[in-house]
Image (cartoon, rainbow, N blue to C red; front, side):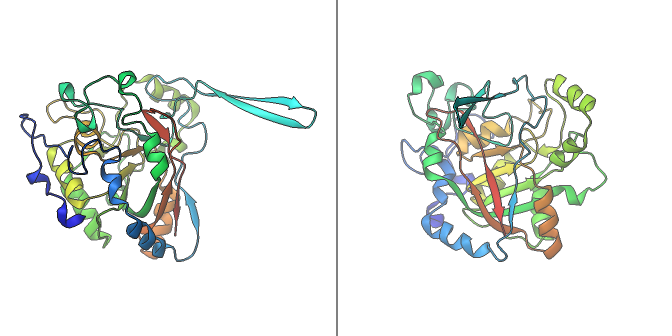
Length: 311
């Protein structure tokens, strides 16, 4: 399959400068995008990344961020009795994208050109097209690699709003002696999750009140899109709230639109790579078996990620 994939420079354009798409690379009507690269052979070979059997959750603790960001409501959890010796519970106001989560293909579209695959209708009119439940049937399982961009700038706050360039991502991989392979699930640590967990209640309240709080993230330019496509990753997960740098620059564009809507690369947000980064740095091994099963929300825009790294 890799030999058949075009380079980014060979992808068709939309008549907009600096914009290329992969809408037909995996066939008409495709629902998986680059998750197609998680072939049976790749998943089977990823099991070899397990050396000790240590399981490390890369999910933020339940209820974080608290308060939720971007104006989302907090979920309410009710436990109630259904019989003399039995209990049940219920979640209300649950936003699937409020915590550690995957952005699905219905999350953003590229202007009038549409969602991934060129779908221009609004999600309610799409039926089950591009719903996150398609990913749930497939699963997001394969070789994970962690690039620790934070370790290159240990004294810098992850709330600084700095842009991580494609060149810096390449240097980080080279310095860690990491080979990013086709079908990998690429994880990038900015340090945001660790810094957020250390904040007090008042600081978290202030952060939530800012509509678009600043934080370090990946550059949203075409160079980043080209690098990630040409690496042929299956998915991308970061430990900040939006993968890309915030605030964004309209003159540069949106990495969400470039990756989700145009290239079909799933985006994971609000992961917690602190413990994993420590384990990887401890033995110099930055790859692992990555397992994440989205919820089968029919027509879902996004889903909790439920991720674990197995070393």
